Image (cartoon, rainbow, N blue to C red):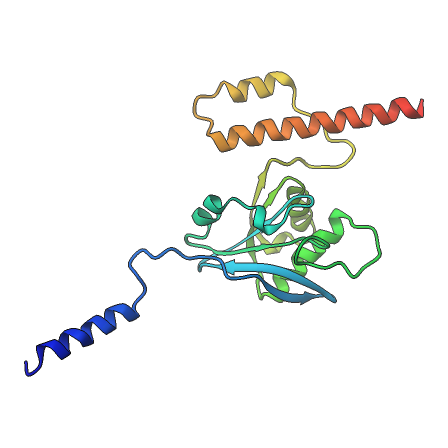
Length: 203
């Protein structure tokens, strides 16, 4: 070997050009894409099967727990976005905002990003939207994951207290699952109280 120093520097340069072993994938900076005349803010990252996350009422994509995203992005092409009229996504329409409208927005975003089929995860009201997406375009949803949500609608019933107590007594219940059970129970009880108050006013 005529010049071992030069050879060593060349090898070092090649190593530095490679991604670090085990380097974690990360989400991009906020990008925008047009969906039916609306500018939708989103972030994406990772590679593999698609996984689209749908945030709940007034929540932004920045509200997703970074630790959760760090786990979900492994082995997935992960997409998070802001719903219509929230943060980086505008709302050029004057029509009433409905779950059906936001489900159509989600499908429009998927199409704009070239996503034909995806795993879909909805949190809270995002769960309503994810369920509507599945109803409207079942062939485009591979797996549906619902977190701290319910079927929605005026006929939703809160789980009986004994069901909640049984869930809480399960030693294998994770802290995240425990939070989801309690959060869902709280929201449904609040909705029941609201409906009861409205009925009292009408009477």
